[in-house]
Image (tube, rainbow, N blue to C red; front, side, top):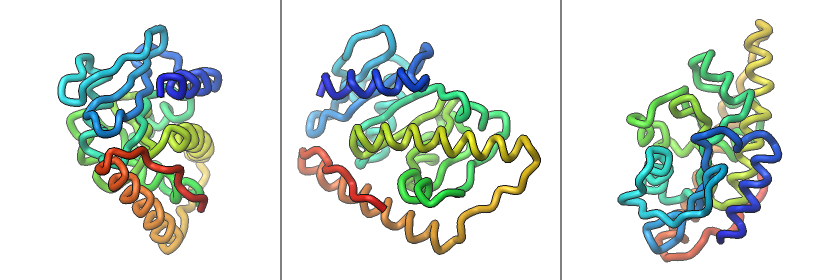
Length: 203
């Protein structure tokens, strides 16, 4: 798993998503109540979810404790995603893939409200000025991080340009969101059995 974590960090870093102090990437150690964590400039550490230490590690641990489906977590600083803080609003579902894999994104929030933000099953949003992303697997985390940044770029440009942003029809959001919740339920069940979740299906 250590090699998987390092390769994922290199990919995120190469795309300008994992470079600033406070950015971090972690993976759940299934069945151990622990996580592997990597911060830019630091090595890979195995940390307890009940006593992770640093504030960034504590945020990751809170995610794993609140969301049994989460297999990987990242706190990132992507250019366009961070622009959402200036808007101070939840980015609506505007693309099919967004609804299917990211679910309902939350408005910029603080760590104290993290459990509430995560409860509906969404997989990305701003927490204390940094993008927090979840994935049931490492690969899904990478996909979700890149997808959120693309959606954020389109949304921010449209909003700043004065354009009207049309939400997806409710039925599309309902069907896509339902499939996402099924994936998350399956991942939760795997983790409860001490098994890593398989990669989710496509749309």
